Image (tube, rainbow, N blue to C red):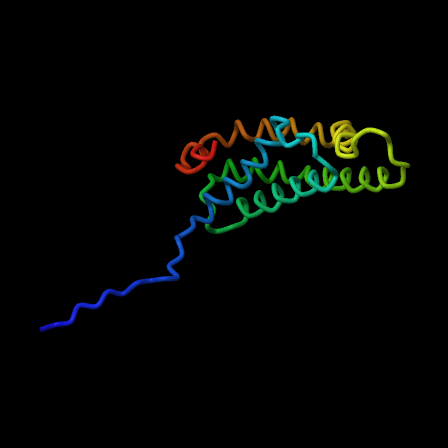
Length: 151
């Protein structure tokens, strides 16, 4: 008689589709920026730089990774978008430095941060271009079964 043994994989990790998860991360940040939902009442220089950095890193991976399933046209669009990232990053850094040199104001510091960030021409350009980019990347989002499940 053969003994039956059951092999239990305790540390079995779920398989992660790196392309889908990177695209989802990028689009979640992009949608928040484009719609203004990122602002909230605690949007600060730190969060602005975090959103920009996350979008830049995800965008770069989507363009350069051999695992990316974006079309060449989508990659060209993202490369063009990446071209504006250094200006946005520099504006955030400069704005943050200028804000730290001013005396504190009576309003909530997060809200005053957001008003200053929203006033940056490069941030406004960034939000407009992000909204346009999202409409151009509609097909990759529609092909990701998990993306809209998070809404």
